[in-house]
Image 1 (cartoon, rainbow over the protein chains, first blue to last red):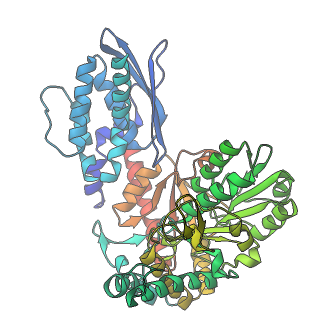
Image 2: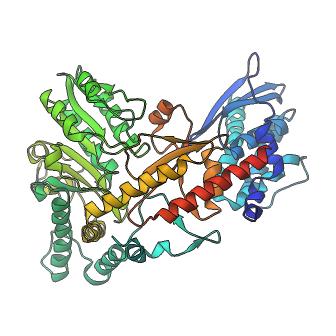
Image 3: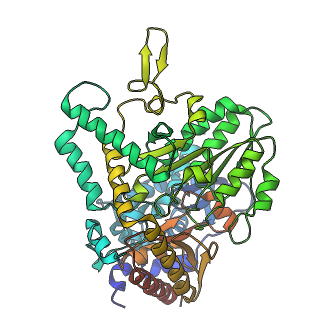
Length: 148
Length: 407
């Protein structure tokens, strides 16, 4: 359908794939950081679970409810940060935030892969908060971990 | 009622959004404004902007006449006994907070009950939670029927002699339920309680007579009835308002000020500290003129027809779930199978259709419905059956679009 051209920049196939088949959805067994984050204006909420060993994210999972953009972004984020050091994970978050604001970002330091499919969200300002929800949760968890 | 003519009065409606003609179905969030309101506000700022109730100059008198004239229009519109019972506020939220703070904190103590319903907007829940915490009073909720209505048996069973305040919405902003306020007020009064009614979703759409309803307090907003944002009304029975302390102190609301003590102006001004919302009140007055020119009975009949038409049309859409009773105000809240309401709203927006998606400031009600969020289409005097047809087409496209994705 013709209406799709614009929408398709938002709902890229790879995003819908993460929405339909979310990676890392579920609970981490044993000790892990649990970070609850919601988007009060729309009711989306996720709980991110992070396992940190030796300054590295050894596991990342999430549970929650939300739209296709927030859940697919959570799925991609958990894939991307797994195995990263806390510093690198926070830097990725910064890169993602720049991407969402339509600013220039360093696309070479990390293999962003699927995440770049979310670039289309910048054209839908009302949905940016959906895309950044999981990343904000990750930042919050790591900042608290670093403050310990 | 000629909707085509009415639509001409709303400049914002005549534009394209995302290459499609705008179909505005979010009037329960805020309504659009007719020329009459826009021009009244502009006229005030261009011709007689001045502070009210002070000074002797000509513009000051004109502004005072405009502001107090708007109060009389509000009084007549909701059939209050006196303009002393009409307090201008920033909106429904401020009006409810004023009662919860001023009346609630003075008249409630441990053991007293505040009775609410699960269908309240956050603005008719949180002020009471805060008052309960401050006074030791407890909150109680009248249970709802499966279709989202209240039964009077439940109302009678919930309100007791310990109940001091009943706070209930006139019309639910999510379900469209129309509550039997007069009967609930009677039950509240029989138990010695006062009743506050959230009229944000009723006053714009139907004739309201606060004396017939016999409510003690009634709150509503200007911006949902064609008026500007930032203006609302607290109606209160005079004998109650007279015994309440102001919530804000400063200029405008005082009688005499001494170094160590002061006295307040008479009603309603003792509740209007600071320079009031002059342009907003004048705009609200113009909105009332606009609605009365059309006739509230005509508006209500038009919207009843739209609500019925929307229910009939949307019932046919496969996989669409509609929440709320059959007899309802002019709004339809729904979800589509396996499509999150945000995604639905984004697809509809790409077709120029504006609907609300989210929890509608009613998280307890979302929990009751066992959903995270919903989408809502709400109608007003300028909406047509064609708008609903466009919505239906948009919903079918939404289903197809996400159906493709999920295929």
